[in-house]
Structure formats: C-alpha cells, structure tokens
Length: 278
Image (cartoon, one colour):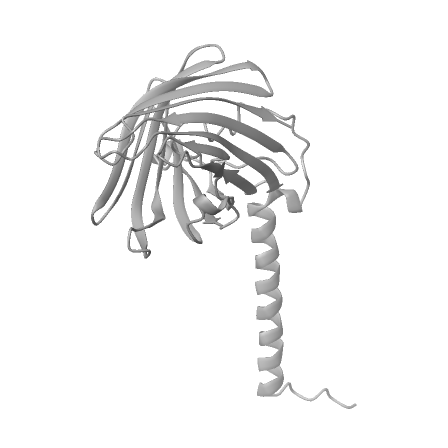
C-alpha cells in the first residue's frame, strides 16, 4: 500500500496563508454588513423631517444621516447686520440639498444662495457652491455617556458670481449628538474652516458650534445655540436662540436669532426657514 507523502513545510505555510486570507475577507464582509445595514437587507422607511432633522435650523449639524434613498430640501433666507468694525450687512437665500447614499453616508450640496451686500457697490450675485459628505460613525451609547458621532468633510468651490469667488476652501467637522437630563438634546461640532485673508493667503480657523434643544409641547422645540470661529488675528462668535415647529411629518419650519460677540461678527443674525423631507 502506498502511503500519502507527509505535507512539507512550504505546503503548510501555503495552507495557513490561504486560511488567513479567507478569514480576513470574511471578516471585512462581516464588518461591512454590520456597519452598513443596507448591504444586507434594506429596510423601507417613511420620509420624516423629525429624524435626523433639519441641519439649517441651528448652528451645529447633527451626527446623523438620512436613510438610503431619502432626501431633504432645506431653505434658510437670512440677514446679517453690519458688524462693529463696519463689515457691511447682507441678505442671503441659503439652501441645503441632502441625499442618503446609504444609511450611514449622506451627500450634500449647500450655498448661501443669492446674496445681496449693502456696500457702496451694492454687490449681489450667487455665493459659492459647496460639496459636502457626512458619515455617521456610531450611535449614542447613553449607558457609557458616549455621544453619537459623525464626520463631515466639505469643499467650497469657485462656482459663484465673480464678486463672491474666494478660491477652493476645504473644511472638516466632527459632529456629536448627546442626550442630557430633562429630555434635552445636546448637539456640538468641532473642526476647522478656511478663510481668505486680506493678503490673499488662506487662514485655517478652529470652528466650534453648539446647541441645546428641548421639545416644550408636541412638535414644537426651542433651542439656544452659538458658534466661535477663531484664528490668529480673526475671530467671529455669536450666541442666540430659536424654535422649530413640525406641523406635519415631512415639513419643519424654524427660526434662529443670534447676537454677535466680537467686533468682526454681525451685530444681529436672523433666519426664517423651512425643510421638506422626501
């Protein structure tokens, strides 16, 4: 009887390598299916403006993204008064378009829209278009006091009227959502934005924004919010409050009024807008 030859060391190494590669691939697939539920079994969801909610209502953006295939249109006409150091007042018709690519990734297009500046030249035109992507990293873990986390990256383009072109400007934000006592929602963002300087160079600014929100009656919530953008020689900061009303499941109406806290910030900022879910 002929016996099978014993496996050589090289054959054993090849078998181990194949097993490790196969295991690694299966692990990657399992992680993708766990993190991106839409890869396994897409769940139909009714369009709702209540969750994740409008991002233009207050200063910070939420950590949450739209479900796959859902969309929001948010419109936010706003007014900024003249600042203490004579930066002129302006009116803008801001908008934000959002689409859920998958359950944890959202594609976004935003702009200040048609803008009128109350200066000597009566400058007016379309503000730059900004492409944005938001990724919902993890949900909140209340038992561990860990917030929901999202990451947002954006790129402001030069697609604008000549008077409003200011070059390509990237930005990055870490978005957090946390539940506090008394059914209070705490939303805060930390990241950086870029701003052109008088000399034509680009300056990176630390950006912090926050909001505390609580529903006072059914479908009506009030909030206080603020923001600070700061870098060498330039700082803007404001604080104020507002409210949001959801008359029907797909529509929200909101307002926000804030006072400037530095000489380079508009003395008063006010908006009145709405959002529609599809």
